[in-house]
Amino acid sequence: MTFYELYLRSFYDSNGDGLGDLQGLKQKLDYLCDLGIDYVWLLPIMKSPAFHGYTVSNFFEVNPVYGDLKDLRETLQEGHKKGIKFILDFPINHVAVTSEWFQRALRGEEPYKNWFIWANEKADLEEKRHWDESKIWQKIGDRYFYGIFGPASPDLNFESKELWDEIKRIFKFWLDNGFDGFRLDAAKHIFDFDIEKMRFHYQHEKNIEFWKEMVSYIKSIKNDALVISEVWDAPEIVRKYEGIFDIGFNFPLAEDLKMTLKNESPQDLVETLKKCMTEYLPNGKVLSMSGNFLTNHDMTRILSDLKDVGKVKLGFSILYTLPGIPFIYYGEETGMKGIPVDVNFTEDSQEPFHWYENGFGPGQTEWKGYKFNPPYSGESVEEQINEKNSILNTIKNLIKFRKSNPWIDDARIEILNFDQNMVKLRCYSQLNEFIAYYNLKSSKCSVLLENGEELLSIGN
Ligand code: ACG
Image 1: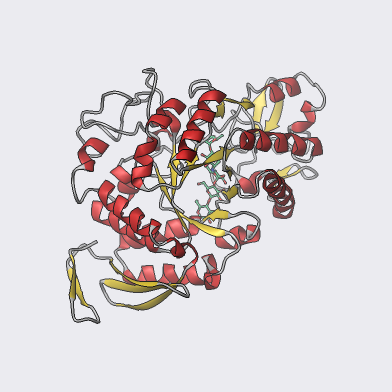
Image 2: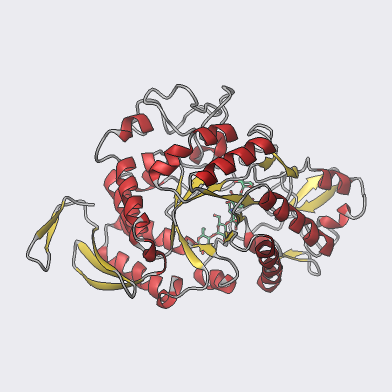
């Protein structure tokens, strides 16, 4: 299975307002088919005042800038006909300040006021979230609400059981409208607060109880729906959620792979692959599949991070030859650049996808001025499509290889050997196998194959 993470606003504009939309996606499904994509993960498309869509103001409405439910159904149906399935990004940890739920809570209406967490005398209003300097308490009028992701996004209080039923209705609504699964945003944050002590505190057991109930509900509506979780944390935490979801994003692998590529170090790759076998994909047998990726919308784009096309190609070569499920973030296939200011402001890693060399033309989105991807910078589809060794064509070939070998998803791996340049890996199942050689250095090197042939690598 191959996945493509797609940001609709930046993809393809069908009505000339400069913003990507659902009909635009429908028109460009063939691009995704041609790339070899099986599943599109759509970043949030519910009604939201924010460019990123993660603060939802109405969970039962398509963001009007993207179209309406009819556009959605048509696009998904057309995709299904072409063999593409769709995963909806599902941000339910919090809502938009403008949402009816929060507005009614502010007016003190039942049950809404209990659906949020309000500071009392025990709260430390200066408390910061654990991974950066952002405060967790947000002021509104003369009150403070708990908002781990900032003042635009009041957290929902899942101690209120009736909220669980409301969330189920939302899942059902989007399944009924044609989605094939969900990406569960901020899955470890549903219960990340201790109401007694009025402090930030992850409660993984409660999260697990919540998600088990939701996943079983989702499967009762559509038994082949795919559920993917975002738990951005160290392996020992990620493992707590093992087996609940179909796929879990492998953040540690993404970090290790990028470090390996930067260091041009075969030794590092060997360590990473060993960790894959022990920690991330124990014995090749996992209950939740490992969602493998190099970057996502919260991160610096891969070319900006590695600063070298050869390394980017090698990164994707490793990604598409490892067991697990490979994901690619839109625009990485053409070498787009982007460095977000930080995780609170990711606009710069979500720039308009470039279809044309000069940056303009039918369907081109223009909602944001380019900062990292100017015209004529070589990363448009128009420029890359006819160049044999472009990133686009390299990735297309890798995906083609992957699609013709679906057994790799749950294959096993074995490190055969490595030297100062190269790592030799065997990837195998009961019936199939291949040998991969990864040249980590930018310099040329060659290997002698068992059949006497010399394999020359021109560097990563
Ligand atoms: C998701 C979305 C993101 C979105 C939200 C909120 C959640 O992808 O676009 O923001 O709807 C944390 C959360 C994630 C969240 C990211 C942005 N992502 O857990 O769910 O923030 C540490 C923390 C992580 C943290 C990460 C961020 O542990 O919890 O992710 O830092 O950098 C090692 C450690 C690991 C550590 C990493 C990195 O691996 O083991 O623990 O992770 O290093 O240091 C969107 C917008 C925001 C807006 C919000 C409402 O983008 O601007 O505010 O919506």
